[in-house]
Image 1 (cartoon, rainbow, N blue to C red):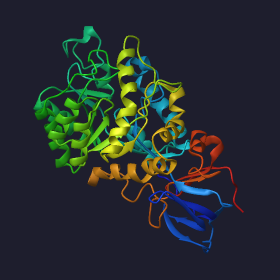
Image 2: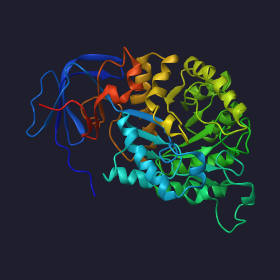
Image 3: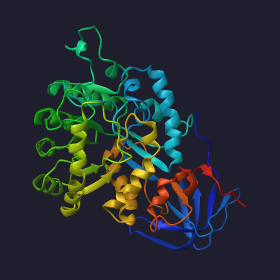
Image 4: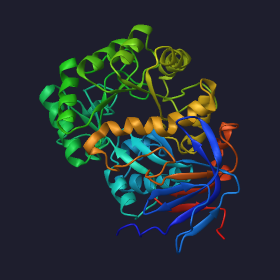
Length: 425
């Protein structure tokens, strides 16, 4: 099954949000053809058979991009993710993919999990969902942030098979340079647009304190070399200076989290052009579920969040934004609220730039492995037509994005209208 050809769309008299400049333009007509933005002009000719959407001065902006999303794992409880029937996980993920798209997120970078089949189904038009840049299985050392085995499953292979998480493609445990090479090449073979490695301790995992450094520089470099041979890059989960500095030496291009970093490391990231993909982790009503006994690890991250954003701004690190929602359907539904929360540290214009064109620049690091060539994150002639018609001006009120059901009148992905609460003429 393939996605049917989209009919032309004309947005009449909308104010385009220029996310590069952080401002709204004067009312214009925007014509969409064949999945791309064809024309932006004061008054456009309406193509034959076009669907006309009256803008009435509303804001037309690019679709949002979440640079750290887990398509399969975001909206199911941890126990289900660890032990549930894989078929159930994928059906639940398809439902959540549609909900993600209807929140205005037309693109996600999947930061780990068996998302290849979901991506294929979305691209084929079988289900609705965002564009997915998949990482495949999260690659972890033994006892690392991706090792969710039970104690009775150690040593590995003792029961004659891999762990459940490995069998379903959520994680891949690999120790030593040759094993990391193999794991990396497997994910690239399956269609990963970039690779994800666990380079330090994590909150949700059972065995690793937050301060531990995972993998050796040589092991990380093995994954980097495998990725570079395919024209793409490696991102790592890491919080501490030691873990991040080792990853930078190994050639990693993007650091996820990093809430415990210091001045020296932030400056090193800036000097090496390394991206910092950060999440607004706070101890508030939107805090992620934390397994019992790991509350102290989460509090360390929360304490470091304010400082981390200050460092990113101070040293002008390339900053991306993502949610990293895991194991909580209620929190997944607050994706837009998590974005709006960034106004605690940035202006609304900066937040919108980060979640559109800046995140798109990060996605472009996948080079020839980019599954969706073309310009994302902008409303410009020739760009891919992922568009949101907003009831209001998010530059004045970023909280509009926290309530997408009410605020997003029209959602377009690749030239197809997936939500329309403003019928055409």
